Length: 147
Image 1: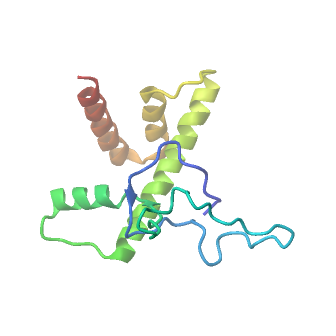
Image 2: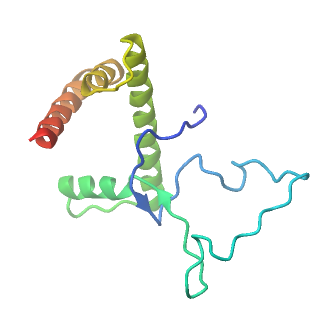
């Protein structure tokens, strides 16, 4: 995979699943020797009144994946590893569609990414029947949003 780019719109935050490509044990840069580590301010956002620190939120598509799974198969669950794979897959498709739609809007010399660019990006990136289903679902979502 290539280097991850920042999100154009953020998915929901969830505490139990971690984002792939995030800074972990080996993903981030090491500490610089010439720069001293910053001390947290006493009135910072992370500190609560009772002295405990809040848990850092991690963005994930997991609640949406779970909702769709329950719509399709009510009695089926999903493991943490499978959820991480699905989350990675959705982030990858989202990144590809957003990149393609952005390049289409650049070609058309517009600064606004509309549903038309998204629709064309879906047609270009997804194969055959999958593109048709995705376009019909997208049109249904846009009409529901508009009304």
